[in-house]
Image (cartoon, rainbow over all chains, first blue to last red):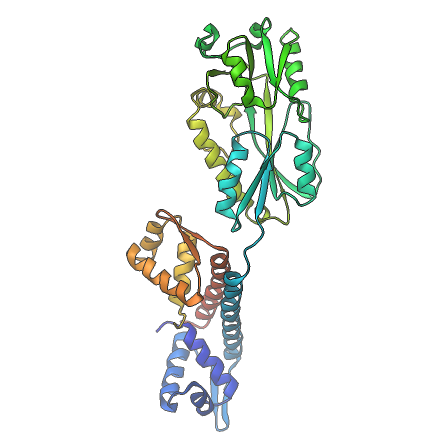
Length: 321
Length: 86
């Protein structure tokens, strides 16, 4: 016979009653039946739990330990029932709030939050990293995807948990019909004669790091157009006159994503979260969800997929190959 | 329903398995049987312990709590069985 939960109830009832007769009354069992059961339980446990005396039963030395453990199990069971009932009947919890800068990891936040947390999810996109950090610090966001560009290191409050998710190359977008679109990669230097469309400046260092990369390539970029965000660059680029930065994980109409030799434009993508949020208890699981979503997106972006295949050493350790 | 150790083992096994098939295989019962038993356990608790997806089962908040408690209980019982047994 294997010990099961009801056997522990019997042991504790006998100990509490101090006699088999008393316990039999409480358990509504016939005394001979309880005597037999108790014997089987003691056999299963490998030794006597009680010494029988003329005045009743007294726990043996090992029996005292067994009874402590049995009481602990019964208390845990009680806690399990009441705790589960509380969770099942409590009011809906407040929503999980996530946010981030434009990109595939931000897109992955909602499904990951739904998978890991239990609350409904709201999401808040914002191009301004400092605003996202402020909202995290103020408890208005639980987790956010942030980015930083080379030379612009983010300063985050130590109260936040952080994780480097990936260092992502930024591609250049050219019109699909343009001869440059036939190439597998471009040198930034050969784009010197062209005019550029850029998303409106953010506070993560995008523009400064772009201009620095152009300076390193030996030219000053002629920026003529400023758009609300990187996706709004597409119609200008598709018209053929300009080229623009290409958000690596997106597909934009009329535009081809062109990798740059040596990946001079790149951003570090980070996850930051509050330590009192649902992410903190289940960070690994949450990050694994993010990577799975990200990998699925990469597979559907031919230019990016090929780039990863050729630059495996750049891959973040968590990214499934 | 009288809760038995088998029920606790079932919820822990389901939580540890990545999908329904693995859980059923580890418990050596059919998936149908696993879902029926789980349904009875959930009815006893008065709510879902697992979110039923396409071939997998993800614990709910209540489910995670129950699984945590169940692990503690199974550990204690394992200790009890271990001492003094020939």
